[in-house]
Image 1 (cartoon, protein in one colour):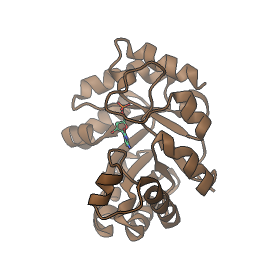
Image 2: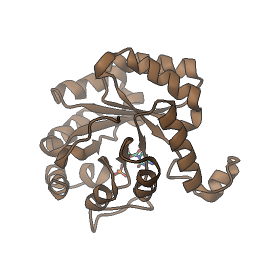
Image 3: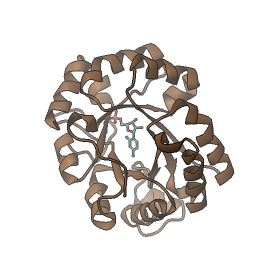
Image 4: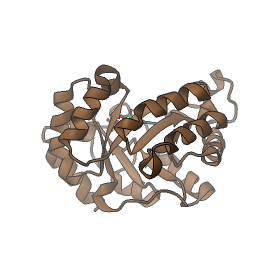
Length: 239
Ligand code: C5P
C-alpha cells in the first residue's frame, strides 16, 4: 500500500526557490492558506542549511516541507545524508533513482529510523532537461520514456514511496505501476501563464486528471505580482 493521498488544494506544493529566507517566508505566508506543502530545494538549502529550513518550518507551524535535495551517492553516504535530515522531519525527500537499488534501499532503511513520521522517499528518474540525444550521451539508448519506466519500476521495488515525474509521464507511470506510487509533478503552468524554461507543461487540472497526486508550482506563484492571489486561483482550480 502506498502513502495516503491528499485531496483538494492540499495537492498543491509551492516551490520556494530563492537563497533569501525572508523572501521564502513571505511567499510561504502569502500562499499558505491554499497550499499543502512547501518545497525547499538545493538553492535554498545550500545557502541556508538546517537553520534556514527551521526558520521556514517554524513560521508555518505544522505545514509539512518537501526537501528536494536529489541525493545521489554510494549507499552508505546517502543513508548518512538521510539520517542527517531526519531531525528536520521533512515530509518528502528526493533521491536519484540512477543511484541504484542498493542506494534506495539504504535510504529507506535510514528513513525508517524516524518511525511512523518518516520522510517519504521520492525517486527522480530522468531529469526533464534530458532529451533522447542528451541521454544517449550518458550511454542510455532507447529514449527517455523507456528509461523512466525502467528506473521507476526499480526504484519502487527498492523501497521508494513515489516518483517525481513530468506531466507527460503521469499516465504512462499510472498505467505501468498502478495507484500505489505517490506521483509528484512539476512543470505545471496555469492556462495562459509564461512557461519559462519548462518545455512540456500541463495545467493544474490536466495534471490532476492525468493521475498526479501532488503538483509542484514555483514561478507562476512566486513570480506573480500577487502571489497570494495566484496561489488561491491555482488552489481553487483543483479544489
Ligand atoms: O518555477 P517552476 O514552477 O518551473 O518550478 C518547478 C520546481 O520543480 C522547481 O523547484 C524545479 O527545480 C522543480 N523540478 C522541475 N522539473 C523536474 C524536477 C523538479 O521543474 N523534473
